[in-house]
Image (cartoon, rainbow, N blue to C red; front, side):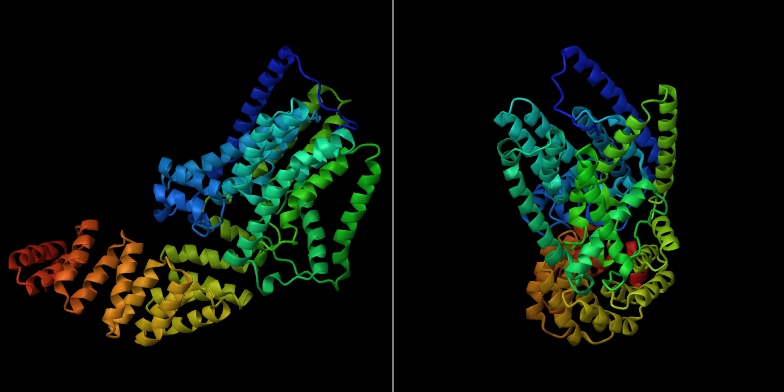
Length: 625
């Protein structure tokens, strides 16, 4: 950044055309280099919580799109524009991951191009070098190669577009139309990811950097509505993280001084990874923050000393202080003063600094451009090309880590052996592939590392159930619900394990609790109904069967079980409908044909009974023995 910049003068049409033409070529280069750097990630599969972002079956309709906007809790986080984008993407390419990865790469490239254009507008030296540093730096890989982090890449596009639109409003004719456009883009950014709430403060820093002071009427007053929107978004997200996602409890019990220590260490950690991007990990070790350890105080003290030095130096050049304020301010939501769920397993993550890194890249590129100005152009370009080649190679290698869950978590454990979360997540992948015994070993290791981990207890019980070891599974589910009383899935699984162990009466209250905690859990509703039926409380079971099939009308087993329950209760005429619905969903369901045949025979409809019995035997000859 230059010393005392002033707003750029209005360019002549000829110069504007040349600038646009050059920017187009720069953008083409950015897109090409990013595509090459991320080739290993394009064939990647689903990771961790990607299934929570790719639109669920119940949200794929127009009604589901309405729920995305109107129902808090319908999606993993209330980012309705993000999940609307995922909704549209699913209609375009379904569950094929290539489309999601390609879009993330294109969004990252678009962000880099917007960044270059923004720095050009601000007359920052080395604008396109900064854009290329951002485009190819490996700390960005997590945001680009992980489908879930489309929230980062998409929100960054709106964030920078809003910044550009606001600067056009600020520099040119300050018309309502320009202001509304900028505000609308800012709202779109907030609806994609709330970390973009830092933008109005960032614009004030930019205004101070450009003019050396802030004017109430010119600089502050136009951004007051933005601050209101930002504050509302931030408060809502903080409440959502705490109340609905689980960012509360012992893992978040940090005092004020501990949070200050944490903030100082986080800032230096991220700066270190930008300066020397070695040993990047999907899940970093979780630090122990202790105010009694003297060296931990060095991080915030060094940060304050740096700010003091930059404030003093700002009399010569405001750029470094502005960059520091932009970096720290954009990081503020993840510095530790506000609880976010990932703090359970780590206080830092590469994707947390996706937006904040822009300020550092701008400062670094400006510094390099000014320092190298005395060297020949050929030497400057060669040095820049070498630096970008190294960063691109590192990103290419890093993006390969995101090919599949096994590569991701095995690499994570190789670099962070104490990562109990990676053991748990690797176990989920092993279990899904039928490697149950291996999954159990990783879950036991996860619990050795973190004995109070309710999710691992539940997953361990679930794998024991898959091996029909129901009695062994019960204590693990019981411990899971003791550790986390509002854990709906664990209550449902405990009920199943108890029922399969012959303790159906004890199981029913857990099914009931699972439904209370998650009223849209069709499986828990169905199991509750089945438990009531097995304990001869059939009249109580009927409304639960009806609700289960209403919640999951495409669930074949729900209709079949409902039909069996009606059949068992002697309500043969009523049982016909559920069996027929099961067969409409799956005409090759042999057991449904057989049970419908038995019902029809009981009602004296011999011809229909014979037809379904013959079809059942044709589909599964073993049923005729």
